[in-house]
Length: 434
Ligand SMILES: CSC[C@H]1O[C@@H](n2cnc3c(O)ncnc32)[C@H](O)[C@@H]1O
Ligand SMILES: [Zn+2]
Image (tube, rainbow, N blue to C red; front, top):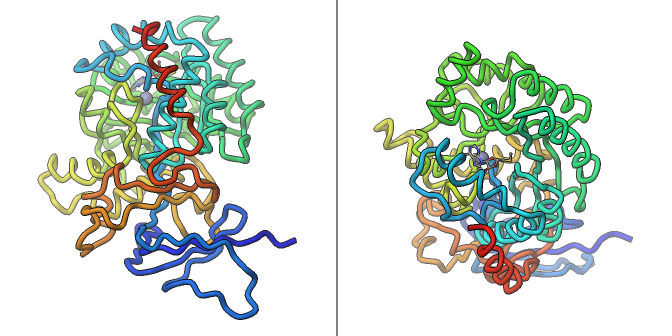
């Protein structure tokens, strides 16, 4: 039997960064996939199969936002260490607190993150953390898409062996699970926590398991200076040397990269997660985004964890990406709204090695759709819909969210998260993690 179709009628839509329709439009969905979009109002034609009709003519549709770098359970550490540079923040505050995180804490921290991400229009996110089984369970229950990896460090033989075996098991258990919403990567933390021979082992394992890699690279000046002192090469050169770039790889940050580093990355198709807010808050610097895009590199946007941001709001990242670089370079033409929007959607999907079509509302794409309140002052008088979404809208304008055609947020409220339970569990856990 042919699956029943659903039609969503809207007041306008951004199909992708190059296709903006600021007039009535409807989408035809079937099996969680967008089959077509048609300008104008929906009218059933004589003899046409009946459809389920959702009428939201005061809403504007955009593709679900894609957060290309994060550590979901770090919501539990929000505000627990502020105004410190990365290395002090990690060693003096974060690592000691993370020692106290239990498996169930990881689960509730991820639930809290999913709640925050869903109501702010993020439908897909990446994660690298410890105890990822619980993260995957929370992601699966939330209805979100997750690109998940076990965070691995190689301080000694024991941590190396555990990291590799946990990663293997995680791929076996979770690759393409939750109706295909979960995909897995390997997650070596950084070159300063994983020695070169261990990074090679990880690259070899990724090739065997046929999964991409995500890693923090060249985040701070100190990281680069230490790497040069210790290994005689930059973190990017090191990553290439040890074989990491022979595989699809998503590099978070890349703030302190030379032109030669960028050429290496571009040649090897290295994808980048740009995290402007986290880089500013930790005082790390500003990544050379324009130079990356000039080399046609795939760059997505990310929040990083809630302890270095301190929220998971992709509207803020989009707006910051579109304004920060203009200010730094005194060039108002840099990173136009369409580019920032593309990074938060389509390019984000590519950065995460996800299926084609994700990050757009084009026919054939999965129906991961966010509906904004068309009667918000941020969307008036509507000279330019794309500009309004990037420069004026915020998380508060998100009303409804669909992932794979399933509604997960209705009128600003998450449908898949027991928010009262999350509130009480997080309050309880705060007493343990302090
Ligand atoms: C080994 S699991 C992931 C690990 O990464 C830590 N982390 C969070 N944010 C950052 C960042 O900006 N740079 C480097 N490492 C970061 C997190 O606390 C976990 O320990
Ligand atoms: Zn990170």
